Image (tube, rainbow, N blue to C red; front, side, top):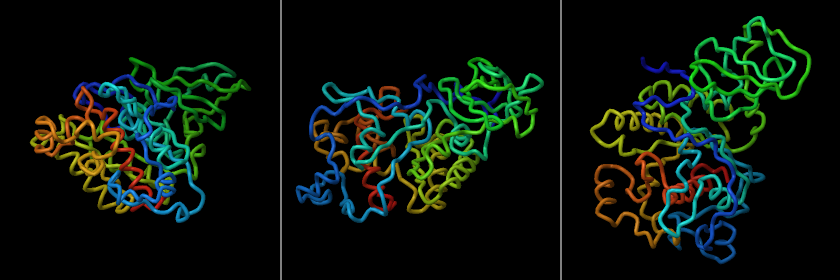
Length: 358
């Protein structure tokens, strides 16, 4: 039976394996050689603009031109935004997470709220209080303490991988899906108190605490690849995410994996979604595919020894409209450490340039 547009937190078999990697967490210091990153401040101190150096293919705005205080950023989405295969790397190359490297390049704190396997509706539920999980507490209500396992009204549920913070009737509760039980969630009361019986209507619905926790930050939204065949749903969910803080939100386009190569239905789905994003979000649309295929980014000092784009397999992938094979992990569906390095530098160039957010 097919998955509903707003289904629980698992990737159906037809979308391939979404490795059971939990949300990205900040890693310890990973960059063991000094040319891994070129910070804006260090480049300006040395008088070398990035355009002249050719390091990331574009000059960045001077630090004094930032619009107000530098804001933290947060990545929203699924396994790609969680840098799920960051450990897939050539010998001697460090593990690279997009959020960690981007934080160093922008010289601001950053994090990821991405959850492997999530579809766009699940990202939306974490981002917006206006799109809650419709929990059916029933007669038992919310207990004074501990955990209660209950269904949802519409079958939607979050991932079973991560307990997400939020509230039910104003009471702090985490929520997570229950493995093997579709449309069922576990609510855990964070602070014990009086039992509540909010009924089965909106008062009983779980609403995210992450909207307020990350208010005022820059939001990088990279979601929908796991339900790309439902492109209309991806577009609607992304639009609702954008509406939370449009002045500080960037929508990231999807890249073509081997399963999305030219001639497949998924090729057309990815192209359709990216075209719609470009039309709707303009300068706040980040073209992921273009940067993964940009030779100027392959020429970063740390990447130059790996000769991205020069191998026969790289050229074969590029000829099919894909990124070079060498930036893609062994599963052919996620970026490896080289790809994450390219993308972090591309995002830094975009956020300090066309997006105007740093």
